[in-house]
Image 1: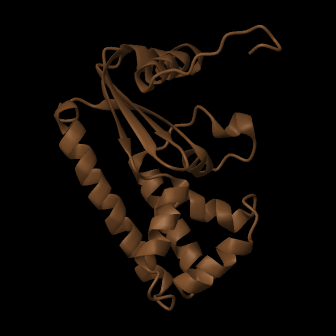
Image 2: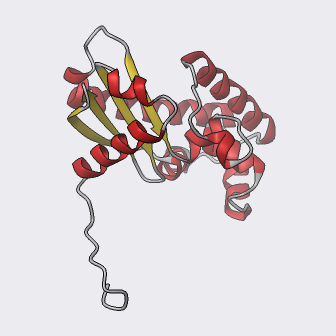
Length: 193
């Protein structure tokens, strides 16, 4: 700040949500859908948490931070299986899915009132796992993509199969996880799942 003479201010979660949705609303090829949607929500997945912000006619109704991110999800799976390194990878993933479901219950308890409208929602999502799910290989091919629920479900199934084929147990996966670089293709599949 002193060296370059610029002032920096960290945005509040509310300000960040509004600014991000505004940016999508002017830069996305789906900007009209975003701007005209009665209901929209934004999912911002990070390594430690996932922020969900709900909008109605462009006004922020509320935000909630879910303690699920690409890193925390993986760590929660390791923690849930720490006493049993020989648990199959399929069982470890089931346990991880249960942890996610429990955290989603907390989300619905806090934000469910905003999500009960029977109208459709326009969803804007971003984060490493979401970007990988597009299947695009380069930056321009990874952004502004439409993923249907069916496409997302298929990505989860195919990545689950790949992970379970690659690792017999959670212990084997954890040992591999400690040695791998984050740009490894299999790591990308694990992150996306």
